[in-house]
Length: 225
Image (cartoon, rainbow, N blue to C red; front, side, top):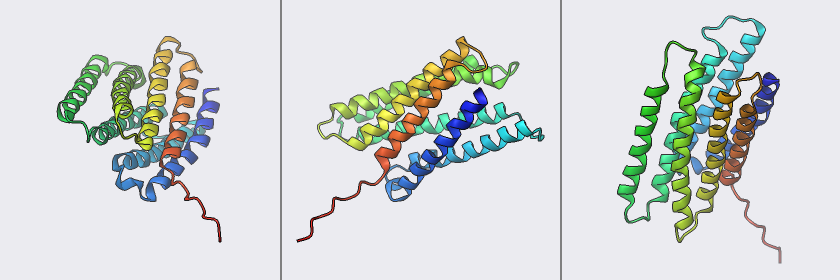
């Protein structure tokens, strides 16, 4: 069942990833270079995971297990996602008078929290998935707080930026789903945990919102005289 869910996520997720990259390549990558980098890495790591997953299913020997590839890729994606939120906070706080202390407090606090969580959960004696699940759950929680701060700044701003609001909203949905999903994985370690379903649907929803936010809006046609 988990394999079926995984393939369903890839079949839906890869087209969304390509659509996001295509939308950014049309010009938005200049404004959102870190989002563009994250989107490319997301696509490449997904391809690597599919290859490793298929190889393990087919009995082909690979250097590491599929779970190892997944968690290494997940750690890389989490770091880039963290950078994405920070970059959006920088953009959203440009017009805030006290932007420097706000940036320093939010970013330093999140980095310290992430580092402390890694030191607490890292354990080389157990499988990588056991401690990485707990660490990524904490990172999702930390990044969700940053995203909430970003959302608050955008809502309080006099000049509403719809695109940033949608990007922040998509991130918020994904972070909340990941945090809940990782917690359910730890509480219900079954072949198909409810956390897996939660993480899949919120991830796809977040990508769809990103695509809607980044794709070019067609100009209305003027009626011919």
